[in-house]
Image (cartoon, rainbow, N blue to C red; front, side, top):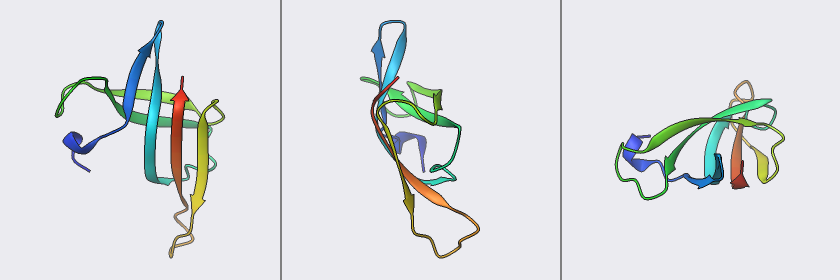
Amino acid sequence: WAPADIEMIATQAGDGFTLSGTKSFVLDGHIANSIIVIARTEGSIGEEGLTAFVVDGNADGLARTALATMDQTRKQARLDFDGVA
């Protein structure tokens, strides 16, 4: 949960970025229309280089998997990003 532990990578691609990595335990991630993601720009270390991105819930390369939870009122998902713009 610490900023230094963020592993998702944002790679510059033309005028934007692509995201690769996994986010786990995302509340309502399986049904969200938009997803706010914190990612590390390539080559950065520690808390430097962290950027917030807004991703469309139906973006190409985004796989969303609902997770089983004990508390059915707080649905969670794993989000896998594979070169998501």
